[in-house]
Length: 587
Ligand code: AGP
Image 1: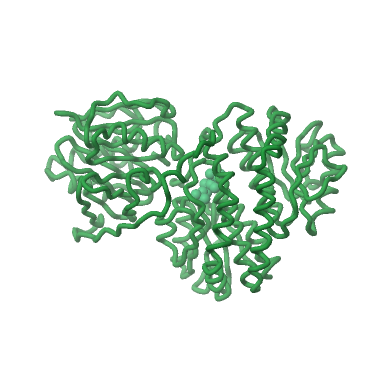
Image 2 (image 1 turned 180 degrees about the vertical axis):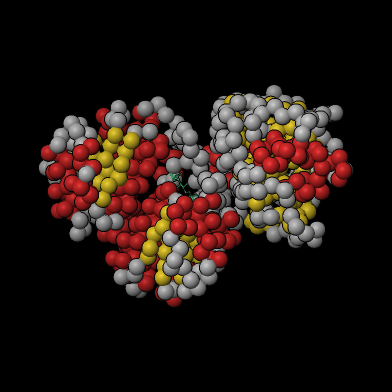
């Protein structure tokens, strides 16, 4: 069923309403359709709908126990029949699922005669449990038997009208148990539980749990031994997970960035020095990450070579398995991820660890699968990031890599100065006049079919990240290029009025990037210059004061804001772009 949001209550005065608001906080995980089921007096009652959660009230009766789901479709179209929860033939059992049951066609053969109403892999599991319940007579044991038959990366939550507890099982997709006296809860993430509790248990792969209002029993799929739950306290506030008055999470999180960078330079130096020590002991170092995180890793490659003279090989998570000849017990795998649940990144780390490598992760979500899988973790502490388009987590990753590269040469104080300069530059970009100008630029270019972003050196990954932001939220086909590559082919795409954002920082790339801008302008392109000084080449100029090696930070903030205003100017929702989800928990 892909990357969905699951939320459940065991004893809430109005569970349907509580679940609805929980699902709204999880919509970044998938927003094709949603559904809730609650216990009724004699049978389960449910409400399912296609599209985003636009209602504020459910039509369901008051009930104390319920499960809910928001979907990102993989198997079966976006229909009410394929929305979750799925039910068995009796209608007494309901199931919600996040992930993909790889062997669902095999399993379907075991439920001949059962009536399926949709086309999903999840519904088959609900009927399998119904079948096993006939012999097991116990919901926990029936679910345990069935989840052991399933293959793939999944999370399930099951409720039955006749049993006073919920059952949840995990092999891949995240499950968080919210500990609340007499009213335990379940969710896909921590942030959606914060308004109820900060005491959580992270279920790990291959674990199944019986969650009753006042107790939790955890076992491994394979054993019957009771596992002692590890309750963790989360230091995020519900407010930090809200929009705090901003129209969208994306803009709120863009404005969070100065505070995020201050927290890093004030509280992460000791950890960064530890991280640098780990790097100095490794023979070969590579990074693994996906999407925006992979562009932060690529920026890291430039920063480590320039500031520490250290080679760090970046790899994209989904491609990592195909080039493994060099991984051994002297290797260090640095994994970067906001969610800590991206499957391709997790699998790459397991792949590297299976070959003896040590794993360090830069991750934002405490207790996530990547955090628990790693030998050493540097938490980004950027606070909850809800918008699908990642912003503050990118800046936090790059700032930590900049500090770490400097720490390898005992030059951390210099990096701290540069990041503080970057914070001042970002504050200028976030000022009302500057924002007004960016909004005007977005109005000017909102009908563009394509847009080019040029950079050299560390500004090349910045260009890739800028293009991804614009693509993700405005659907304009933006491409980031290493500017030197232009004349080797892609300049053929430039025609009259092609907008071209050019990163021209005060470093060794300046003169070459300006000549690249001239070549584009000569073919009718419109140059939007992001630079520390104006240049006659620029048709539009976005000033960003020089912050040395930290200049990539404010440069990317300019692009984040432009992407945001382009999306708004095109009447789009920047927080929930089509076809995307915040953390990609499927292959
Ligand atoms: C970025 O805006 C996207 N949401 C996406 O590229 C994301 O960076 C990628 O899926 C990796 O996610 P992670 O950082 O949570 O691992």
